[in-house]
Image 1 (cartoon, helix red, strand yellow):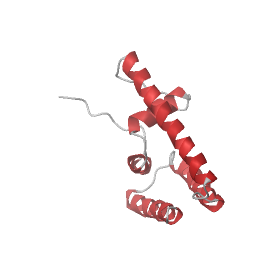
Image 2: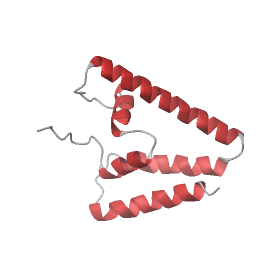
Image 3: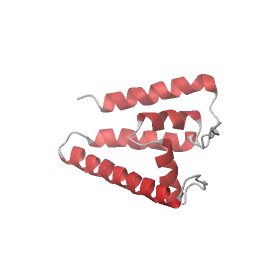
Image 4: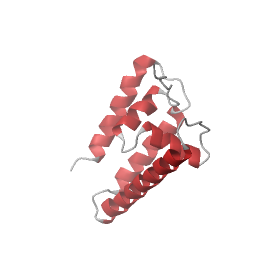
Length: 120
């Protein structure tokens, strides 16, 4: 029977990852590559470097998207400010224990702010 790997992230971070462009494994690989997370991967070196390349390409595409959306005036300075403040809060949350009954409330706030920023 396959081992079920335990997540290296709390449930709020897991939920955010599921809504992002990245998989949990890709986030782990990026963090590991930037020395922000020590993690042992049960995959071959070749598979690791292939996934690292895919993660790097996805991250570059994300940055190009930000530059494009900002340059075209779709992503406004206020949107970037809201995302920066949300990112600061997520930075605090990532190392915190959040009561399960509060997780949905936190995600609802994050979802609402992101939906407001994305009103096209």
